[in-house]
Length: 87
Image (tube, rainbow, N blue to C red; front, side, top):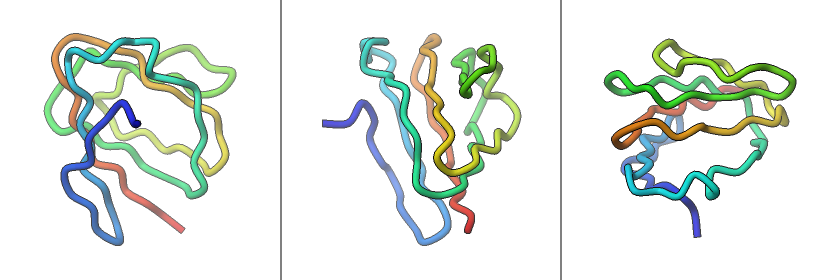
């Protein structure tokens, strides 16, 4: 079971939501099989941490190369984001 809900899926992007009641322990380090650009829908105090980097704001688009370890860090409220898949 995933810690998020995919609201919309197309060939080019996914709209994903993390519930405000999620247990932070569920936000595991992981990596994906394609390059991605993460764009937050709205503003948030949630953060993202990329491998060998300090946590950073998600309020600007974040580029994540394929196979790079990363994780979300829980903030307040729910998190909605748009994941742009790139080849």
